[in-house]
Image 1 (cartoon, rainbow, N blue to C red):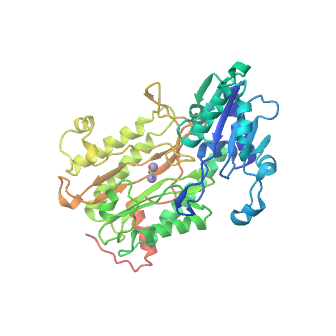
Image 2 (cartoon, protein in one colour):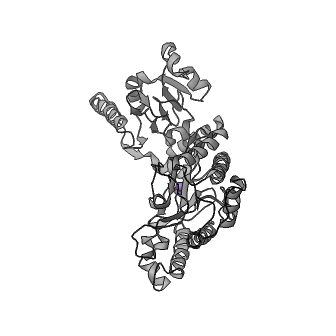
Image 3 (cartoon, rainbow, N blue to C red):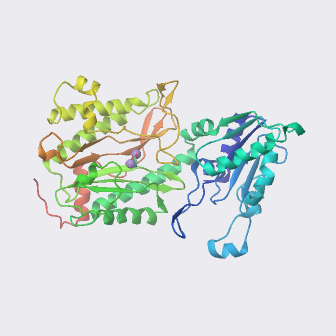
Length: 445
Ligand code: GLY
Ligand code: MN
Ligand code: MN
């Protein structure tokens, strides 16, 4: 992402804040995994969206109209000794030269400098509750100002949730963001294809996960956007399964929900396919229902439609399918009204997608499902999950199916960003057969 994209975002936010206001955004802290071992560092998305600054121990302050610079970045000082261990730091010079801050101070001086920046300000934009330690420090700075009120110090009158403004901006993707999301989608689709080609009965689920990660990194995505789900058989029915340590068995389906993060933007794809390369009759029947539900939902993604329209379309098609196959009994409209499908489909059909896999942005406006508008990106991911013990014929048991794509709302409809991996069952089988190099035995159950 280019520097001018970040500066455009800051300008847009500051215009909405107006003068007399200050926004404060702390970077996420480094987190420990276990003694001395850290998790890989990933800045908080709100912070990164406005700064493009990749280091921890930083705080961005936006002060529209401030004479000595509107964008102030507190960050670590250069430190020769520390840099021997953990690599170069931008320091104050880099914050200005490389990252476009108007001014920069050492993070260790923030206690002395930030309170002064709050003096005389009317409104403070800040997101409470995300970084509790920083919340406490901010309250401390404000209290310090309050204690000086008799000396004529003016304290901020209002604290305003920053996320309302910022998350509304993040919901609408710019051309640069869409380019990054297309790339994340392309890489992730290739990774799913690789997993389909590589799959063999007897592999461990995490060995299939290794194929995904290999493709992500080889193609330039350093990290997955979230922990990949690779669930064979019954594990495909566990919605947030991430153990990924069971053996993939001949005759089972495997559900893979995995996406790469590219330049801080997520893809989120799910495909479900037969471990041995051929769908059984009952697997294919349920699969076709999910696929039809997804097609109906994607068809409902267009400007003017509302957030719930794709979900409602999916629910209708899923319920019709469940009745047709005998998993539900009754009239479709009644079953939909009574939410009887929820035994087999217990999540929503999608979510916003962006820098966070479950991205920010309101789903309702004034208590109404919001209208879809060009520039929004969402997932479309209906599924059916039939667990063992369900009161349906045993042939359906341990069948977990989800099909998930990432969809951009365009001026006249939508664009599926993740079309690079097949979902038509014949195409899936053909791709898997390619991987087996003809050695996969052709059989039908
Ligand atoms: N990968 C998380 C989700 O599909 O919502
Ligand atoms: Mn997913
Ligand atoms: Mn998703």
